[in-house]
Length: 570
Image (cartoon, rainbow, N blue to C red; front, side, top):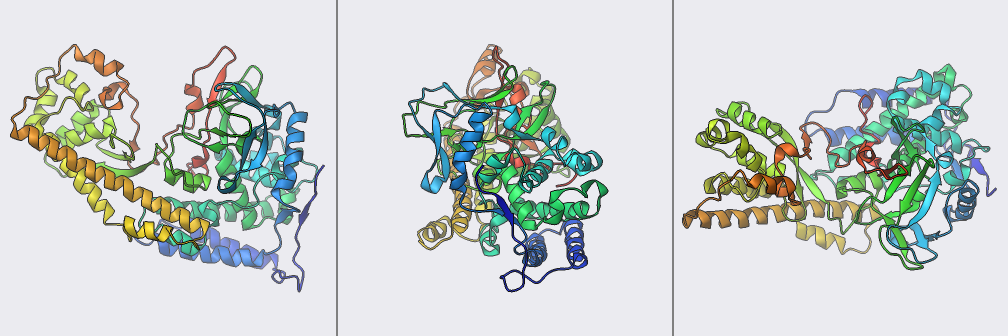
């Protein structure tokens, strides 16, 4: 069915490199693995390390030229086979077709009117590529003996994808052939395109992603070539860096967590057809039906015939979209930048501040988020800043004063300031901190806007500039908001306005309000993570917290950001 895959082999005069001896290639791979496994560079040396790693990778790519598995024809040629295969395997595909939407790429177009919340798409488990299907495939013997594969399901999926792509008899070929041949993740950026992100918050994650991928490739190249359990893998004959980069990007942009067949735990999966849907703002509308053992998707909104069908990928920042999905989303209402804050242990009042924060369920050192919308700070960050700016007397009041325990409930509530002085201090601090962060960028927002007007910008360059501009615009909004709040509370102080008093009866308001800023800190899950951890708004076990229907539907959400952040091999 469809066109067959072919392997390009290196031939003299064909434009490929001269034949490379296995020993020469293994030496290069060993050098790459050693470089990527060395201690983290000192601050400010990350770019230098990236250039060195990239140089080694480019040497390897040059010598591997013409060795990757490719498919004849265009991606679009294989969509009819994909849809036929899906229907033959019990998927519901009669409400849409795959269509090219220009700048948005391929997506699903409705072939009839679809009502909001109508079930229009389902994909049975047998179509999914999962960690379990990898264990039951030719990769199984190697999986059972390698701790990295066992610890990192996403890497297992990447190798599973490559093994099946190299197998002409694979049942997943209709799906694999329909995948993009290249991606727009930063793994595909040219060096000068990555350089445009220097000075941004996103650049460290971009450099780490490249280093992690290079290290994983070098490790598995050596494993595939030397481990007895890999001797029969089709992958053994052709396993290039470009192959692994493609597989990593395929998994990173598409992987999701689903329950295992018995529902007792989670596993990672690639979900054919459904993963053609593009993103928009909204709510998660995909779940897993344990009774029927299939992924199900209901419509996010009403769709008319010929309209594009969208799904919501989750509350991701644009940095996460660019790094893990390969696109920038202009109307992202969940965009944010990170800010690392902590109470210095050398501060005289450290113990008191740490205790008040602990009672509120907030670490003394934490990575918070500054949001693109109002309010720009969460209840947790407001509470932290209030404690951070407290005087000794104010700290004593929250630790030992009358109704001290109940006062903890008000720390994240914008309606109950600690004092006018405290509000002025915290908003002044935020205004100043945002302004200082803006000065770390190499360009201004105005300069970025001018660059974006250039018609000859590459797609990746445009995305990189859009991302750094979005970061600055959030910081500019936060600084302006801080200034406005500071002036507001200075006026309150000058007018000698009375402070609102917290009453016992207000606890009902605090518990039941829908407004984030009014929720009691200790009754809510802390959104931010401790310093040193990666911010992940969607937990990897997100769908287990979903509301189950009578058919045991479990909410499903893309988790592409975990591709290179798993413990033990990141």
